[in-house]
Amino acid sequence: MANLKVVTALLKTIWLYGLMGGLYICVNAWVHPNTLPLMVTHLTPWLREDTFGVICFIASALAFFLLQTLKKSTKLFD
Image (cartoon, rainbow, N blue to C red; front, side, top):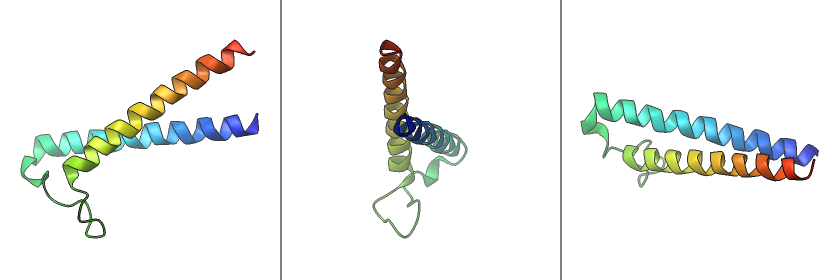
């Protein structure tokens, strides 16, 4: 049961931060569209702003899907 709480907390964190990162990139693309091809940080030259937005969206959607699946599967066994 404790492991389930940890997994749920981790998935909620990924969902929330992925959503916020994706929304940040959406607003940034609307306000400053010329910065999308720029790097997010100098530590990862392959990670551009647009790539970061896609990764955030995928992580958020996957975490939300897993949360919903986990919620449905645990209700079956209660």
